[in-house]
Amino acid sequence: ILNVEQSPQSLHVQEGDSTNFTCSFPSSNFYALHWYRWETAKSPEALFVMTLNGDEKKKGRISATLNTKEGYSYLYIKGSQPEDSATYLCASLDSNYQLIWGAGTKLIIKP
Amino acid sequence: DAMVIQNPRYQVTQFGKPVTLSCSQTLNHNVMYWYQQKSSQAPKLLFHYYDKDFNNEADTPDNFQSRRPNTSFCFLDIRSPGLGDAAMYLCATSGPGHRHGYTFGSGTRLTVV
Image 1 (tube, rainbow over the protein chains, first blue to last red):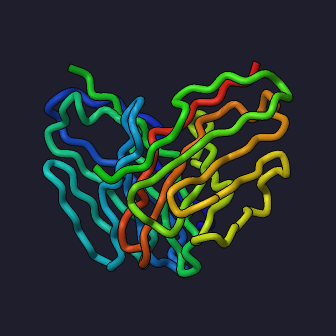
Image 2: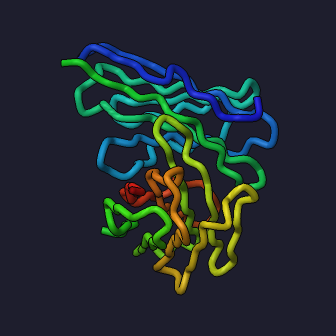
C-alpha cells in the first residue's frame, strides 16, 4: 500500500449503537499514525497519535488500535451519540516526517 | 487559549483576481502547513515551513505562493485563482518531535466566481 485508505467512505449509525472503521497505511518507513475528528464548521481535532505496534488508545467512548506490521488501524466508537457525527481522518507519518492523509470516513449518527 | 486562527472563514474571489489567506498561531510551533482540501478527498499538502525554511511540494502549482514573515503568521497567496482552486484551505502547526497531532485552524472556504 502506498496511500492511506479509509473505509467506509461514509457510515450511518443509529444513536446508541457502536461502530468502527478502518485506516490502512504503508507499513514500510512507518513512524506514527494520527487520527483526527473534523466536525462541520470546526477545526480538525487530533484524537490520537499512535506509534507502537499493538498500541491501543482510548478517549472517552472512542478508542483506536494499531497494527504497524500489517499496516492498519481501527477506530471504535462505543454507544454513538449525535455529537459523534463528523468526518474521521487518519494520516500516516513516515520516517521522513511526511504525513500522508486518508480521505476520511464521514460518520452520521441517526437519532 | 493557544490556537491557530485563519481568516477569513469564507472568501469569494473573482476568476483571476489575486487573493490572500492568512493564518496565525499562538502556540509558538516551528512548523506551519498549508493544505488544500476538496470535497471527499484527502487533504493535499501545498507547502510547509520549518521555521523560515520553505518547503514546496513538487506538484503544488506556481499559482500558489506563501510567506511566513515571523513565527506567528503565515500567508497563502493565490496569484490567479481558477475555478479549480475552489476548496477548503487549512492551516496547521506542529511542534518538535512529531509525537503530537497537528493543530489546525478552522479553515478558509474559497469560492471562485
